[in-house]
Length: 239
Image (cartoon, rainbow, N blue to C red; front, side, top):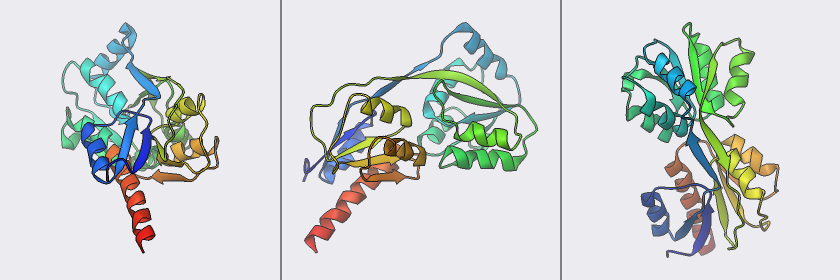
């Protein structure tokens, strides 16, 4: 069955996930449309290291932020962590303990709601990208929750022309959407899969194609949704 459905994924995926899709007759080509680079200037590194010794609340909405922060920690800090679920939570647990994670959420807006509800009194640090989304900061400010943003990685769009035709395209961020459509157009019957409502809404500013959004923040959950979508179609065609 492998190769029945051809899909383009706009970010890197583990080979195990690609193989899982292949077992269901779905061939995934991976072509990254963004790249991320950790901020390595002296000021930022010293700022992270200074926070190591403080009892603070830290917010991560991206695995990239976690990966940028951990190498600069002088020791294991006593932080209260609020983070996205899925791969972001897994990366946090690769260094911190389970007790460090106070709350997780499926999306940034829900995470902001949990931070607001906690009525946190200590300093809140939001480790983020230079192109971070507005969802969490806007909600926190609206409810008077004070926090400081520390940009620890940069998101860089890498648009390029896609020559092949695909049945679907998978997007994991609004930045990837912008980068893809900066160089490409698609047929109206191409299905677009998005991780989260914000990415889905960004797609809808470019095209009127069918957009299927996953509420879960994990890579594998989104690919499972892709597999289930085409499995349902095959069952419908047989009936």
